[in-house]
Length: 452
Image (tube, rainbow, N blue to C red):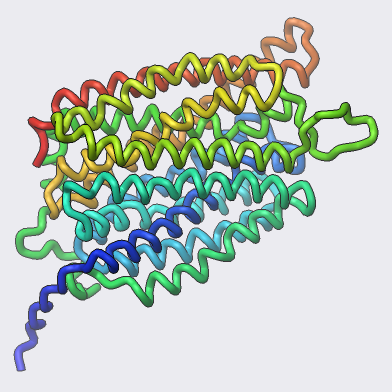
């Protein structure tokens, strides 16, 4: 017998029902991805008080701790996904990040929480590129933006559960129990992914996963191909801005509503009538983010598939205009006198912040060939995640502390200075939305020319 492995038989073409099943399962994987990622945002203020953290430490804990390995590990895992069994990569990743989410609930100081969040980022690094690549094999180009839009709807629904559930559990139990309940379901879903989703490319061997097969581009070659396309880098720059704003604000949602809008951790006889408690804020915030975010993700995919008939560049024009138009509404929301009116106005940038999802990743896939799709997504996630997700919360935290110290130097009380400093830090943050919109417009101009 020859010691050369027989070639793998080509996999059967997926049926629409099976493609829908995989999309549904990956939807829940993505939902838990964002639940475990975003629950830190609603819990940041109680954790800050309990562990005695500064605003800068909150920014590091919510952003950079997660992003540093989430982004840098994405590239090598994407190379593995282009050659090995993508469902197994997703299942293993899900199990790792769910386990570390549980460990977040056991943290006793800033360092232990930071390291647990690093572990969550390490686990989540493997899910995105493999899932995008898998869905690209299951859906044709004319249906891909719609499928990715549905997949992207998991983002706001995960956030909804994180904020509503995290707020309720924290008020009635503690932030530690919230982490335990967030992490446990992923351990079960990982088993389902491993057992029921097959690899469309057949059954590639792990022994060959680290060798570039014939016809497979090495990372350097794949990156060189993408680097020659200006449209790809405008999409990356737009993604940086979207995530910079989204994660920068999300890290301080609780801080804004507690310090500025007067939300209380618990209601006492002295609490003025009509004051929101922490659980009410969590539910309202979760509904605002979940509903407006889901609307943005769903409509982004639908609109992109519809306007594509007028020219592929139009798929990026609409998200560009929404990003620019949402900037003044974001600013206006920061100066409202009630939490309800603030949330109504914050819905606009939330819609814009998820509308881009389907059109952007469909455009990224159109700029890459089958051999480079996972690499294209992973490089996008590396740059956008490290600069946007990693530095957005840190940027807001540092500005908040700088403004707080300045205002206290002018005689303002510490609590008032902390709240007012946060408002002005978020005003500056909102300007990055318009900057992102400009990059979407530039990407729209060159998309047809640079498509693979």
